[in-house]
Amino acid sequence: MDKTEINKIRNFSIIAHIDHGKSTLADRLMEVTGAVRQRDIKERMLDTLELEQERGITIKLQTVRMNYNHKNEDYILNLIDTPGHVDFSYEVSRSLAASEGALLLVDATQGIQAQTLTNMYKALENNLEIIPVINKVDLPSAQIEKTEEEIISTFGFKREEILRASGKTGIGIENILDTIIERVPSPQTRAQKEENETKMLIYDSFYHEHKGVIALVRVISGELKTNDRVYVMGTKTTIEPLEIGYLKPSLEKNQRLVAGEVGYIATGLKDIKMVHVGDTVVLKSEFENNNSIKALPGYKQPKPMVFVSLFPVEADDFKEFQEALEKLSLNDAALTYEKETSIVLGSGFVVGFLGLLHMEITQERLEREFDVNLIATSPSVEYLITLSTNNPSKIAGINLANVEGDILRVRTANEFPDTTYIKEIKEPWIKSEIITPEQYIGQIMELIQSNRGEYVSMNYLTETAIKGSKHVMITANLPTAEVIVNFFDKLKSVTQGYASMDYNFLEYRCSDVTRVTILVNYEQVEALSFLTHKTNSERRGKEMVSKLRTIIPRHQFKVPIQASISGRVIARETIQAYKKDVTAKLYGGDITRKMKLREKQKKGKKRLKMFGNVEIPKEAFLAALKKD
Image 1 (cartoon, helix red, strand yellow):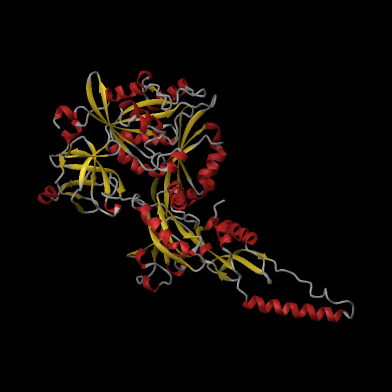
Image 2: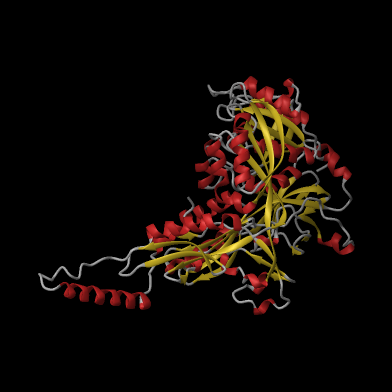
């Protein structure tokens, strides 16, 4: 491909808040450009998972190469899809890094939301040409002029730059395509700025049954031919590609990929963790001649933020569960898992996720697609504990694989060491940006405060669809552990669903985290113990024991349920024993006869309590661990 042809390429993404119509708009673009045949057209074509279709969100991003004729000249348009949720913000940033332009999609019925702003800032960081588009203009509730004013006052666009469209009916689709060609720069200028080496950015990957891991790449500079060996710089992996080509949207083989093009490399690898999103691919021959080649900026290793222990409800299902998790992780490099054994729940895995939505989606897919019923413990985060000993092997119960120097990484209550070995505990914090109508500022401030958060700043944005009020962006720092429990639900509740939130990992901070141990009949129940901040320990301990009192069945003797911290009981409930009237068979006689029988019953219950075990049914665990 020569320079003239490269000038006919346009690489662009669509950025939007969740459920603003991104996938539907992509369908219409593919339909108008003929990227799919008329008989193959269906709703939300780029959302290939059943869950994506149901929930209306993009989980796994897709890419499509489209051909379009503009003013009697043929152009190649590469739509680089972006996931639609805050959990996948890093993937969004890598998709944008592979593009020269972006359609900024705003729902005419909802206006600007938190992710609209965040993704806009990411696009500006990558120096993209932004084309603002108001979507869903066909709806009766669409407030087009108001949304237009929001876009102008928030981002500084001119009125004539804003396009109007409807992904559902196809209004304005050809205008969007023409505008992309006219306003989005070709990759030529960017390719000239790069060095002479061949460099490619991996912006996504997935597993193919016959071709192994497929890396989706944007060629930044140089060119790749079929027989070239390549080297992945982040994971230090050498690959001999099985084939290379384009996505249309199915895989279409080609002999070479040149600077500015978007395509795929079929690696033949069986482990997706060898090909990370954001990594740089170079030619092996060039790297051997010059191993000082610099990687493209912005690469980060996928790092889970939320950890949950998953156990199959039926112990016999463990093998199926393990196979299901292995298959799911083939397409998800961010999913991590380690084996865990619980005395009560049997064998399972501690699974790491990018966020709560990532966790919900994965759990639902495991149960639906692989027919495995699961018990999930309360979500946790990764704490960093500085140990006071140089010999961690003498600490009972810790996993030495999680120790680096004097730092122990802890994800579950079972791994938490004795307090005598703890010098310092650090927990992860996030920076959150909440966009809300101004009348809910007070409630949100209270919510931030009650979740140990700290207020940073507040900016007025523009008028909202709610008459007479303005949009406000509140920036606050919050402990991740507080956010993952039910912060989103509370935020939606106090703002009647009008607020939206976006967040990014901030840093690790020193914290007073403690382990709350749950005891049933004076026996520790590891599966129900949990980690929390000291200020929440009594409240959460009381909640757990009072919940257990209602779900553990009664026995012939009293059963105490306790929550304790370092041996000190902070909450207690008692399940009363069954009562049997042992004097019912008596018909008269002296009172001492009744007293003797009652004394005998009391001794029997005491002996039963000493030797009796309390059996906690699995249903009780399911109910106790279920999030409120």
